[in-house]
Amino acid sequence: MCFENDMSSVQANLDVTAGCHTLDGEAALAVARARKGPGLGDGSDIGRIDRQQELLTNMVEQVLERNVMTDFGELFQFLRAATSSLITGDRIGDLTTMAGLAYSLREIDQGDVTFVTMPYDWAGARVHPNDLSEDLWDSIRADEPMALPPEPEQSGSPPETTPGAGT
View 1 (cartoon, helix red, strand yellow):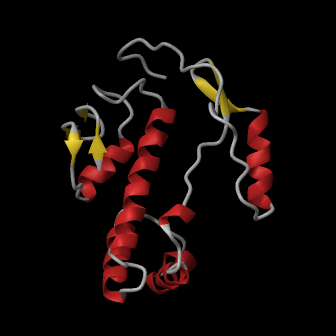
View 2 (cartoon, rainbow, N blue to C red):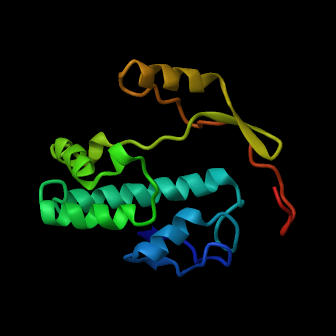
């Protein structure tokens, strides 16, 4: 995964330098969890969501490049690692069930995977769905291509925060 800036977060145990890195599980988890700290932007959950989506995009790319979906040994190793820090229900959390689901997606291309943040407006230190969000949800409910809003997705900007202040 490539980073434009050095990033660090004491709370998330993150310390990564600018540039491209191969992340182990702990570092990837730290990137996913980090919200506040040098190099992490405005400290908002929206910024964290953007990094999480980038992390997942990179993970999908690696899984597809390595043919993990069709190599059962690799697939079970990947699923064991992925589930080691998750609590799942008995039915979906079963490795055989997850492997079957993954195998059913074996023909998927990276271009078929889209991550999107629900359209929102800033409301102080929080965000609220805006008028475009219902179109997105309607398309998902109807199992149709996602109704993606035109750029920019949201209006306004994150509120100014005082360093060290809790939100």
